[in-house]
Length: 259
Image (cartoon, rainbow, N blue to C red; front, side, top):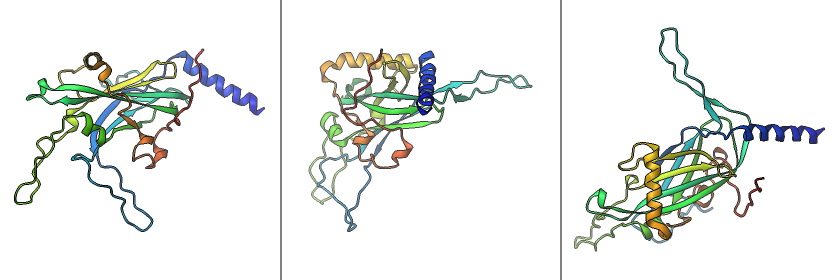
């Protein structure tokens, strides 16, 4: 009896997902710089290494999306005004092996003005075990460590200390506005579920932003820094409120073969 019930559930889920590619709705992307959380030892002391970099913050890419939503058709009120459509859950199904693909355009060589800046590309991805198509707002985060920001971006180092002992200000400090980001969610068979962008200079529409990243990928070619955008489970935030984020698949998990 249990086997029949489970088979029925799987067949319903497969039917829902095969009929139409689910939507992740509008994907909103936010960038920020954040210090890693501090962990203390049993005795209360803080484990500190030596200061290696001027910038010790991580670049945080945060994507907010609503898996499995559709918008209700706009309706008119009695006064004739059009009511705003609201997202509703598409089904009670789950979608396995969703991948979050991220590209980060970073300032490789800073020009005298913004238009003269040469950009490189960081890339990375997160594979989720399963995401419910519940229509709720989900948040996914990925991170670029300060080590890689120091290695690849054009951060000018500080000059020697002044005679009075005071540390001079850095000649240049990175800001979230220095980076452009593309986030694309795909299903196990490569179908796009949703995408979002941070603000991109000179691009307003999604098509213009897509064109910017395709051109940039072609320009950098083999200089793209693969794996530089870390998934949450490889970051210092891995153990903070894990139940509030979709479950990430462990490394080495093999995706099922699509027929």
